[in-house]
Image (cartoon, rainbow, N blue to C red; front, top):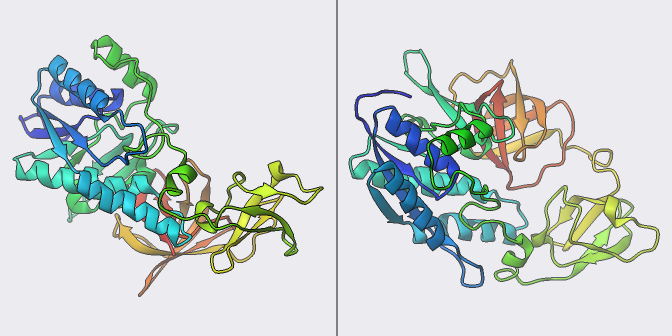
Length: 358
């Protein structure tokens, strides 16, 4: 924790155990804690359990004897997260809505509103850490969470220095088992509640079914690496590089359970599949990033870093090259990467930059 001098912190309470324990720990540290539930947009065709989650957040606040507020960011979420995601898929790209949710809602609108109301900090139940560097700029570092299975730093790469100094991640130094234990020991009403899954605020949804409400299906061909038509798909927009489900193989002898999407042609509305996703790759050892956020100012082109192109994905050794248009990553090996994905670069456990694959 940064201090114990009654600083005021607004904690985003989702109704789950992670944010509940975050509020508990901050109160024990002596902070003036306010619980906040964030209302967002839900389409009419999806089941919505927002009111139940809000009631759980209220129960947590009552148990901790802290004030409770509700912030309505429906319009901001709809425009900055949902519409962004839909429009990116329409262009044949693969966005990460959780990254945009953190940028636009949790550490965008929520942080701004909290500060306006007198908060010194905002806090969430993310498994990540923030550390102040001992340098002349007093800058902050974004560090991986201690629990490798729960680390969420990948989703937080858009955080800038002015935000990092206003954010607390109380459970970033804990393993999930310890978080559960603390919740149970302190009789938090959600100590045994299951973890939420899926897209930020929308939950565990069928993405293709969700997108079909906004993107018209357009039947196209599935090709093998020789260019032969071996099946069909519902439209390039519904698929991503590396995916192995959702398309249909009609040519005998092709084993669809072993086929990966290795290429998409948006103009021709075709996808190319292969049994071996690694051996079929050509020329993907250089990744151009746009909309880059440099968390660290001490990035060297002479140093080796590690890039992660999907949450809980592999780490690839790389060199970072800066240019006038953005950042270019030169990887040691070719990898499957989709346009629009978030790519995050680490120096050990420290997240130094992130961007969108061009």
